[in-house]
Length: 90
Image 1 (cartoon, helix red, strand yellow):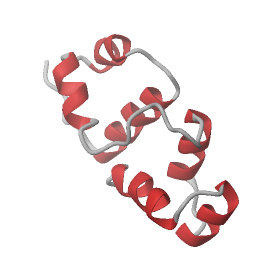
Image 2 (image 1 turned 180 degrees about the horizontal axis):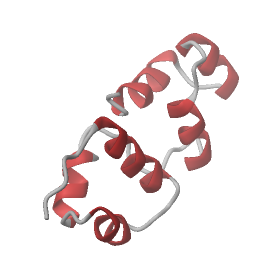
Image 3 (image 1 turned 90 degrees about the vertical axis):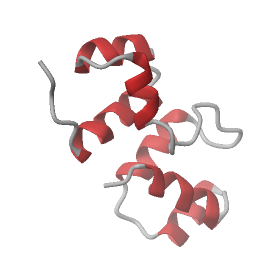
């Protein structure tokens, strides 16, 4: 049975990915192939962040703070925050 992949589901997939859940487990959970999961992660930053932990990336994605405030809070560039926020596509 095919499910409609909504923006909310994509956000949940990305949050699970950044929480360290293996892609194989995410694909079983949503009934997608691993390739399908990677397709929805194509614009997402990679898991390994030199200055940010996966937990911090999740906090950034779910935050309502301005990009400038987040960049100061986490000590990274505005562009880094913008790319992380843009990757959620919500």
